[in-house]
Length: 168
Image 1 (tube, rainbow, N blue to C red):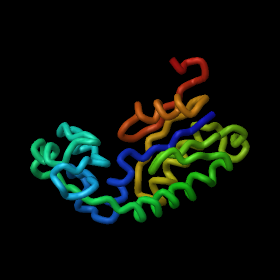
Image 2 (cartoon, rainbow, N blue to C red):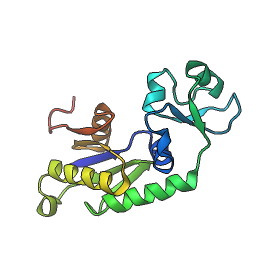
Image 3 (tube, one colour):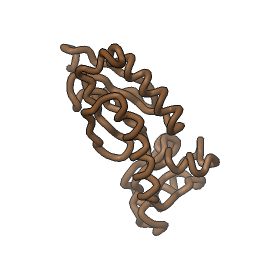
């Protein structure tokens, strides 16, 4: 079974760890403060206001005047990604980073150490929450694509298991 670990809006979640006052606020990260700068990341709160990734900053500000826009801090995100990698790599030797905040783990053969894959997923979730103070979404399925889709279904948080033969 493949377990997809995803932290939605990873860069924004990292920024919220640094600046807790950003929690529960509409936040976006843009390439610059120029009105034409495209948004790279958008918080769930901003998304609910109609703000989307790729949108120009000036359009986003029209939708939400209280939008807090930050410039990217790639080194900060890379450090957090490395920490996430260290936490999840304890669960299997076979894993792949897909992008920031998104990692696939092959849980095949790990039942002797962690029990069923769903139990390992629950343990992994609590360790990520304790170690990074971030709540991941998890998808568990036979392959990477289905597990990734399953993790997207469970936004903002949770675990979705797709049983073999029920992928459609």
